[in-house]
Length: 126
Image 1 (cartoon, rainbow, N blue to C red):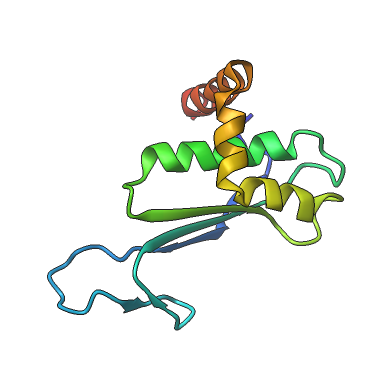
Image 2: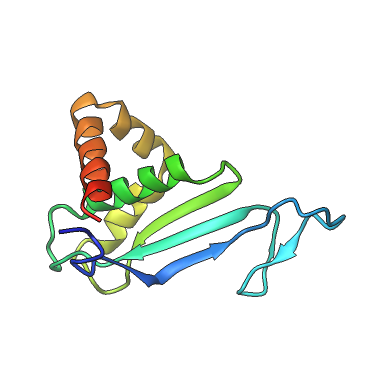
C-alpha cells in the first residue's frame, strides 16, 4: 500500500506557492497566506497511521527526500506531522525541519538504502 492509500498523505495537506521567473520585475510575490515570498515553497502535512507510530520520522524523511529530489532547487520544502496526530509530533517535526540532522541521517548508508527503497517501491505501486 502507498502512503496515500493508507491516508498518511492527502492532497488537502499539501500547500504549494511557486514563485517562478515569469518576467515580472517584482521579485517578491504574495503567497496564499498574503505574505510576501522571495522563494517557492512546498509544505506537506502527513498523518501517521497510529498516534505512537514508530515509523513517523522515517515516513517524513522519505517524503522530504522525494520532494527534494523531484522539485527544482527554488523550492523550500517543509514536511510536518499534522497537529494532534502523533504522540511525539513536536520532536519528529523538529528532526524533519533540521537540515543538519536530515543530512546526517542520509549519510548513514543503511538508512539511505531504506529511504531509497521506500521511494522506489512507492513509485512502483501506483
